[in-house]
Picture: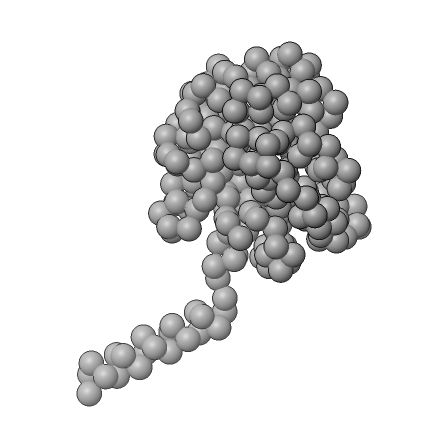
Length: 226
Ligand code: E4P
């Protein structure tokens, strides 16, 4: 399973990228708002992320509300850099826009997916990536991982050749809150997990690793001083 980072913060992206295991970036309007970004700077900011992560897919979300508006904004976002993926929230207008954008070889990440039927519709419309949300189900006392399992199983039953430029659909596990979400997503065979930086750091840390390292350092001091 590949790791994407779920942030629009350039410093977080740069640090995660320096780890050598980053495969992409996802952003959304809320994540952009958290950077303090202004409306006029949005496309420039997406371009900066795309340049920082050259060759890796970077999802930039359209805020248009009509199919025509999504297609127009999607074309503009995709023209910023070859690695920009247009992110659209699943709805009838977005399915129509996805169909059009896919026919122009523009990659779409369909977001705010909460059911297998939404995922199947998105894949049929031509979405390249599908983002089922896990944490927001858990927030309302539902089992987000079970919901993810249903999406992974349904999409995995079919061949998506001919539906988008890459002839494949990848599931991006989204709304990830914990390392356990990441582990469970990988056990299910989800293609990708997009993880906020704080949760990514938790994925790396383990108290036994820290204890073991402290022991190695202490023993090495003894070797040096013997
Ligand atoms: C994914 O692409 C979404 O932007 C993101 O995972 C949303 O997560 P949240 O539920 O933490 O806002």
